[in-house]
Structures are given as structure tokens and as C-alpha cells.
Length: 85
Image (cartoon, rainbow, N blue to C red):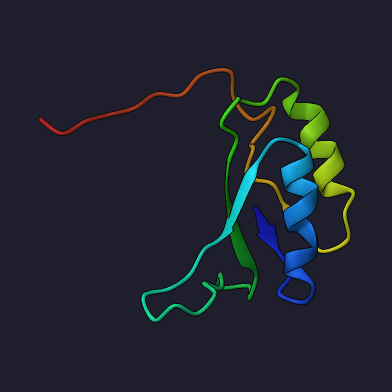
């Protein structure tokens, strides 16, 4: 999940309430990793899966400071994976 640096920690309990286990991504020096846009990334595992992904995405995107969820819903019905020879 991509979040604004200001107040990033306010999203932790909200993600936990939805069944996720959020962890702030850090660089090799232990500092918060920032994207090219200056956003922080929360890596989130959902140990029990996500029963209603669209509802989780709506809930998270409604939060101020939550820029994207990384769920990629509604993009493509299939994925083609290639491999080298």
C-alpha cells in the first residue's frame, strides 16, 4: 500500500482491523523506503486471505493519506507469464 509519509502510522490499525498485517518497508539502512513520488510503502499480508477485496479497497482508499492499495482490482481477467528459453 502506498501512503503519504505524514501520518503513515495511522493506517496500521485500520489495516489490522481488515485482517492485514502491515509492515513499513525499509531500505538497507533501516530508513523508511520512499517511492519516486515520496510515498511510503506498507507491505501487508492477509494471513486468512481477503474475502471481499473490493470492500477492503474502498475502505482503505477512503482514508486520507492512502494513495493506493496495490490490490489491482478490475485490471485484466488473465495474466500471461513468459519465461526465457
